[in-house]
Amino acid sequence: MVKFLKQSLASQLDVDLMSEKCGFALEQLMELAGFSVAQSISKVYPKKSNSRVYVLTGPGNNGGDGLVAARHLSHFGYKPKLYYPKQPKNEHYQRLLKQCFQCDIELEPDLDKGLDQCDLIVDALFGFGFKPPIREPFGNALKALGNTKIPIVSVDVPSGWDVDNGKVDDSCINPEMLVSLSAPKPCAKFFEGKYHFLGGRFIPRFLAKEYDLDLPEYPGSEQCVLLSKI
Image (cartoon, rainbow, N blue to C red; front, side):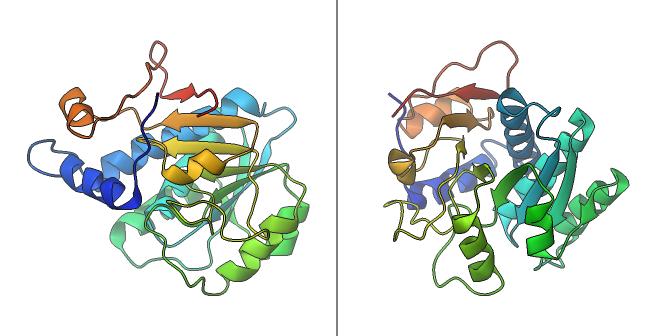
């Protein structure tokens, strides 16, 4: 049984991972998380029929995971484009964006156009740190995602959902795939899509024990694992 990681504990886990006792940097965690998202996508959505990926990227760490995932998807042979309306001036995010540009990943600021021209959507708008209200242009983006028939892959938390309690109303998005990072958040109990992966294979065993996380075994050298219904 995989234990759920509430919003407050998820924040504390990140603090512990980046403390002296674990020694991780934010950049490392983001790279590993984003790679696991890209790998999860590659296992379910073949690039032959799902090559055009529209990555909706928010201004925080979840958006950074999305930028990393986009870069790796490009290396895997997909053709990602980015919706990135609120770009942080933080040097780390600027480097991630530059890395995407160096992989010939383009920005597509026209949301309707981007959705019309894609086979798959990656929802990397808001993560476990999200707190309402939703400000524009993200409200419009979530409304569009709520109405689309294109498959959606949500990174860690479906954007707009309450991290601990799930959907806030019937207009919330319904992703086909959820890639939980580190450990599933409580909102994953309400996920009704087809594929639930766990990614982020970086938690030291002693820390998993401290948080009482009963994490599944990752097969071989894989960075993601498909979860059964939880």
